Amino acid sequence: MTILDGKKVSNDIKEEIAVEVSNMVANGEKVPHLAAILVGTDGASMTYVNAKVKACEKIGFHSTLIDLPEETTEDVLLQKINELNTNDDIDGFIVQLPLPKHIDEQKVLMAIDPNKDVDGFHPTNVGKMALDLPTFLPATPFGIMELLERYNVETSGKNVVVMGRSHIVGRPMSILMSQKRKAGDATVTVVHSRTKNLAEITRGADIIVAAIGISEYLTGDMVKDGVVVIDVGITRVPDDTKKAGYRLAGDVDFASVSPKASFITPVPGGVGPMTIAMLLKNTLLARERHG
Ligand code: GUN
Figure 1 (cartoon, rainbow, N blue to C red):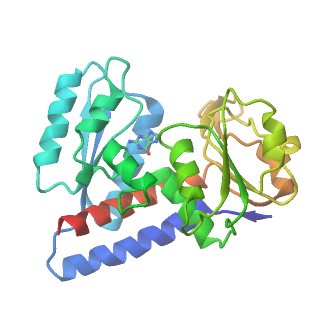
Figure 2 (cartoon, helix red, strand yellow; figure 1 turned 180 degrees about the vertical axis):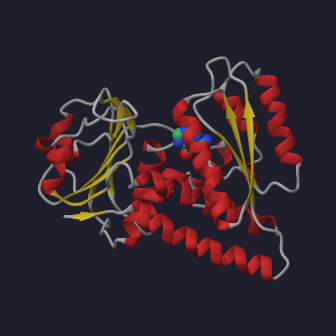
């Protein structure tokens, strides 16, 4: 069994990007600048956004964090987005999801200039992704593709089961892996909360991408020997033995699944760090495209 070490691979990618940033500085070019908007004080979102900003600093990008209170109106948020759209100094930006309930997420995502949409969530970029045209790929699926590729995991002709149909992971993952591309060329099945005989389907999978947001849902009896398992889930499970009062759990029950797996991602240290690395890659790409 091989652990797909997202932490290591993401560090490799960050080092590769840092070299490019050094070259930009040596040539007197402007370095990439990423901005992130966070609305509210959701603990997980704050952790993610801070990690993104810290990663920027580490590799030499400029970064700006725009921290807005929970009660921010949709209009004020749209105004902020417009400011970032028109600010030539900003190469790319993200609006951390989820947003407070009183804000229409779709309206917000549609307000982002597709050329600065380094999350790849704007309908224009989702459409380009579906048509396999150059665009910003959403960071989590992009990171999973990169991880599979760097570990030379064979995907061509394989049966892939994507668990979950979210707009930011499951859906794009299923599209990318079915495409004729590196880490693609697979036969993809999407399963979700309404799927019948789910375990029968997962037992037929060569590769499983678990992105349903239910901790330790995928268990050993639901997979076949030699399966490749990508765990996208990350939930806080109460645990009195930990100082923080919780532990981080994925969508996969690692204890029962890992003995049967040929490759498996850990949680934490698997998909999570890859997401951040690919966001940085998209920001570098945005800088290069803006010229
Ligand atoms: N919330 C969970 N994942 C993501 C992501 O990749 N980007 C943004 N903006 N919000 C998220």
